[in-house]
Length: 191
Image 1 (cartoon, rainbow, N blue to C red):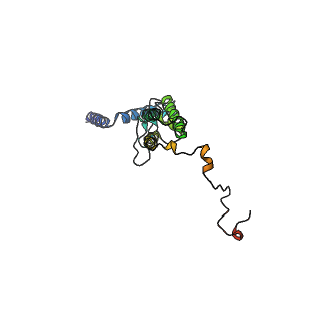
Image 2 (image 1 turned 60 degrees about the vertical axis):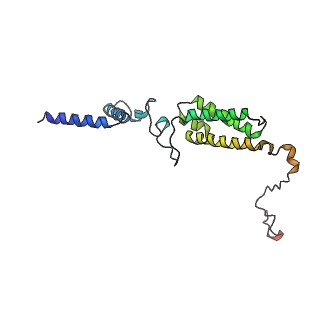
Image 3 (image 1 turned 90 degrees about the horizontal axis):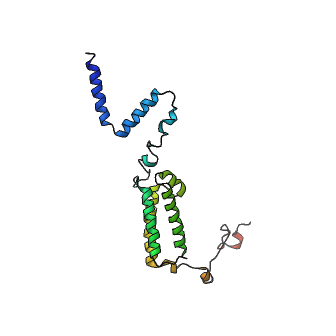
């Protein structure tokens, strides 16, 4: 009877191991090896670059934003979508001196450069761009494409005031918003 117990335990262990995913098996093996190895510090468990770290980089399972799923190809999509923006602007008749075009080209080129410099490190892309998660950067590129299409269709660069047009506009500039010009003179706060 003592011989059948280990066999039964072995079969149970095999069936449980089959049910676990490869990642779970790998993690469990590393935990057992680490527990038996006293010389390795506990912090080194996730220090290997080859190991996926849950919640970070390629191991990210959630963006934490409702309706925005994790996209493990987001970095390459950033390059594609921002390049499409640059291509659309260069193919348009929008002048190169239009402020919107100059700003968008700077932003798009910077994000493409960052994404190409760090294709396997979405966390670094997020840190350098400082505009949200990589999934959000992809959404921003999609939104910007819609804005660009509207800007081109309406030829909005022609409607933007230039320095030459400054005399046509009468802008009331009040550097002290605490002073209410509409109030009676006796009600004005004293400085």
